[in-house]
Image (cartoon, rainbow, N blue to C red):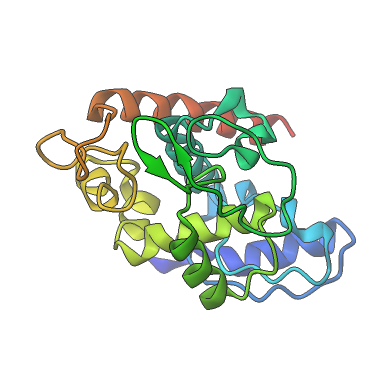
Length: 212
């Protein structure tokens, strides 16, 4: 019954008017139950030139936070994770991907909250026209990768299921495939651990939204 649903795009525009931004957003259109529409995150509306490709709902924010948790860049939710390189080092310049190879147990130039390797970042940044490596652009790039893996709609509707994790395993080595293993033979989080983190984080985000 679509009478009980609204598009997240229209919800965002309405919130923008209420907040006095007066801007029209260029964004994807997803459907949310009416009772959830007010929970769409509007953090990216402060910059009038920002064009959203993916809306940030609490469910999607919880997913992004779970990826950070799995990749070791959660850092208690601090923005420091967006400046973290493979191996735990920190870089300062967010104008671009740092593209530095770090040798630990493995060699990698992965960087940022979602540990993008340079080639992946360059491809996604080109597809989404992302101008720099700022946190909001890293978020958009991560959601784009989730979408390309065919997991975004499933997570929007059903949360972080085993099936969704398996779809994301080829993208993030820390995510388990159906068998519970890393697709790349690297350390991996279990289905249960990631599902627990996702659920707890989502509840916290929903409570914060209700209180605001």
